Length: 488
Ligand SMILES: [Mn+2]
Image (cartoon, rainbow, N blue to C red; front, side, top):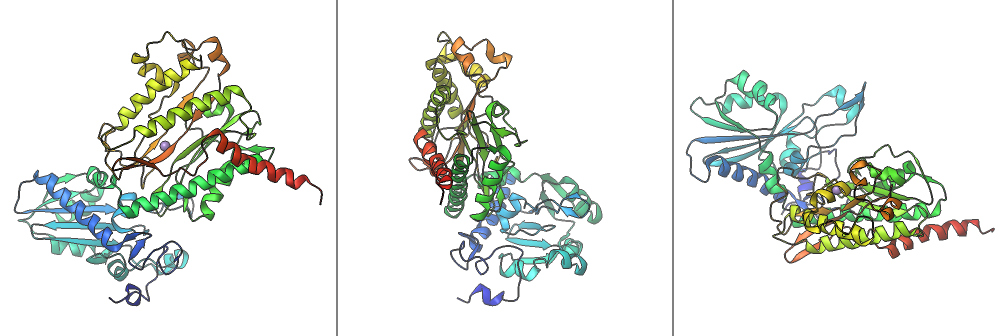
């Protein structure tokens, strides 16, 4: 077979390819590492097939046509001419592998055929001077494997040809105004229904292919190594602040090939860890406190999501820290052991609530007299967030998939129990005298877990989690600091 790169020799791309980044790609047929042009084509086919099935409820309907429109992200500005870092729309990326902005995918299904079309931004001599050339329609066909590709300025002509008053068209698009202003009004195309394709895409995206699993493994590996290095860094530097730990994780992820952090991280030391979405990340870390870090990265569009809580000093010298941490660690490991096909995220959450209350009672933090069976409301006061969410191209992936759906092999989820002992009044009534000593301490431990045929596999297993491993990695930093003090 002729190499695709011979055909596409003159094409340029605004994204990594096998040719430009051979260290990440396996073969020339990959559009992103491990995901071939054929897999992207299959995804588009599956979207069309599922949309058709949902629309007709399995019955054969003769003349119904479907137009599924998935726009790319547009360039967004933070101030005059200064763009925000570009982040592709996950659904557009899932169906194309393309980083192009101001483009859209059009999938057409008629009773006898499917057409996969990409519309791309028009060449702009002035804009291209600043931003570089855009992907051409030829590249969209040759490299990305679309059946046809046009410039967005050609869309009206395309619609004119497509328009047929006898045709009944169901349009699938999240952006209503795009459909009303771009299709219905100017061309008076008879649209029989306007549907949102989101849940169809979520249904497909929640199950990861082998290529996607490998990307998730890589993303998890990169973030795990960044956490190792952050622990070394804290051990090495007697004075750190949250901002520096953030910078360290960001740096260590990027040097390993991640595009960016997957979300604004939480780096919260001391009692600030009680603020679940604390992102100010600029306070000093005290050596006798713990720091909670919730961070992950994106690798070719696939996210990792890790939380670790560790003593800034690198040693679990404080008995309160040590005992509460050990309890949460055992709880988190027990919940992960329950992950298998058939169980639901809500069931994991229930299990966490029961075990959290028992753990707090065993440590004497809350009263023994509380009935463990009616604990979920009390558990929510100590851990006000869910224990799990789906993970994939988005951090909070496939949100239309309910948390009471049975897990299937190939799904990837987080397991992230937390405990937040605040001085908040809604906990006071439960805290014992011993419990009051723990006030201000917050711990969350989060791993990314793949559901397998017979259980699960932790993708973030390299990230230090046991007390011994955390002290080991922090200890590497302490050793470095001591070595640098030895006079030469
Ligand atoms: Mn998470």
